[in-house]
Image (tube, rainbow over all chains, first blue to last red):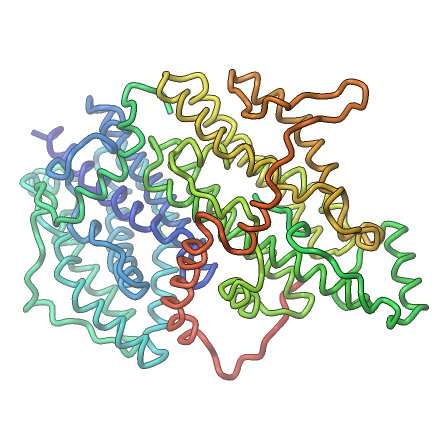
Length: 251
Length: 328
């Protein structure tokens, strides 16, 4: 039971990072300024590197090799939140997702660095320092653009409104939620969500953006259980396009 | 990646007689002694103009070159390749950032340079007007085009303009890793399964003529460049670079069991020079002037990125801020 719970936790973290890392990497060559091109590429490298660290922990628990886990499962076998798989849209959309996602990720990793399961605690302690910079980057941009031109504010507000239900889907409860909390492995999604709401509210309060009304939102759930939008499978097909040419070869 | 900046256009050595003879003599004397010219130093107009053009085109080559390779990031086979390719392409965009800053020290802003790129007024390395059909094409670029860029940039880093030389030294250090990555990925394919070997051979066949044109037209065809050589703007002739490249890389390609698609390629032991089928310079000229398989697509993507990002740049503008030239 406990091992299944740990695997479930590892899968959702790793899959979120892989899929969002993939999306971030799609900004390569297309950023609004060169500096952002470089920043999104850095974050993509971190996210994909982090996913590799978590797939490696899964492999140590008897799951397949990281390359197989990432490149050969189908969409229904992925545990990422639907939030991470949505196409990038314009820069405002990607920026809002980055802001909402990384603030949650930072809290998740702070909590995981105290996890009762030592391999997770070790990895989380090592990686949380990198995520700190992702948050710094996101919050700085939201503060800057969130009180700039009318167009920027209105774009960010629209993206915030349309992404909030998906962002709330990140906190979808696992069937192992209570086991993870009781064994001290994970603080649980509710605790993370509460702190997340406080933190993003603080940043938004320093801008001209308005926090959407949370109680009236319907979270987009299902991702943690393999239910995805139409966007995930094409993303996975693209990711596996080369490796599938000769799956037994070394590339 | 991706130098070759000074080889794209003919050079017109005009207006030199209008320069102050005493200043010119002092300027040339400093260069002859191996001194670097810095942004606030006196320099002839032609020197400034040529350097802006060369550095700007080099910078454009970096961001345009990020497109044909970048498209393989999402498809790279396995974590190891994916992480390496992401870092590599990110480096290239970083090189563009360094180079635009170096060019800005000469008085042209990044915005003006990007506008000239999109309008087609300013060129970039012609090789990126060709497509990357398969993963193997991206590996061949990472190895053999980057290798060409290193030959070119190592030479140029000994040039006379301080900011460009310093940027090139940093760039070359990173390029050395790109070369290792590219070589490693080609080795795996060339020594891998029959499908992989076929993929990489086909990619080499497609890219060989681009590799041969990378250093620009033959010295026999290109206009005289003595002034630029004396000013250490251009450090080696196109043919010198090409010969050096063939010396270094032909053995490495053959060692992997790959075939170079030029039956005439051989080293003449008497002259010490490589002999080869002359690349199609008419095609080169046609493509660099806009009529290549990917010119429209590359500029279209760049234009789209600029247009879609316009609101961001506008929002970042601080009306009270003054333009500050980057540190040299």
